[in-house]
Amino acid sequence: MCSGLLIMVLATLPLTQTGDPSDGMATGVTKPYYFAVLTSDYDLAVDWYLTTFGLEKIDQMQADDKSWRIANLRNADLWIEIIWLQSAAPAQRDHGLFKVGFFVPDLASIASRLGNTMDEPPRIIEDPAHKVRFIQLKDPDGNIIQIFESEQEP
Image 1: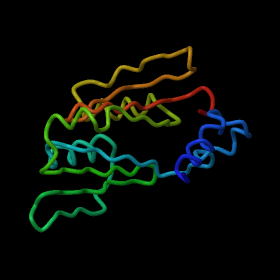
Image 2: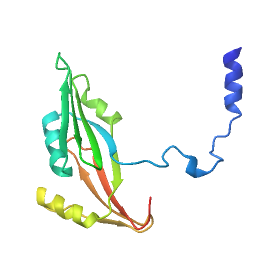
Image 3: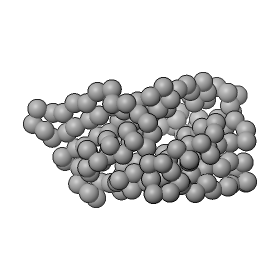
Image 4: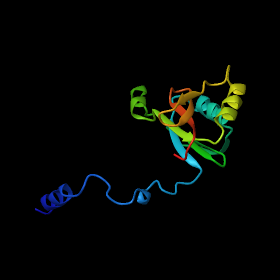
């Protein structure tokens, strides 16, 4: 009886936000930006993220039975957690991170710096409809990292 009443009450709630958009949970998000990556090759992923993003390894840990390993990589703006799980079958990759992105103030200098660590600088893609420029990188597991520069605040 009580659960039926709860379902009826929830069904009457509006599905859209009617308040001030500045009340949203993302308002006031501050640095460092964070994301975690499930990887199939721990050492390769750690090295790639350290080199590509100029991060420092702040710590790493592993289970006593070696069933998982984690590295936390960070600088003042970005924190990336690299996770290797022995139990993560390759098919589970479809359920993990597909792509993540963040904004930077000077995309050209980032692309140039990345070009020094890669065969060639990544191509800058113009997106006038959204008033952004961006580059796309793929990590060793195929996850897509998009780095944006905006003409306006996102």
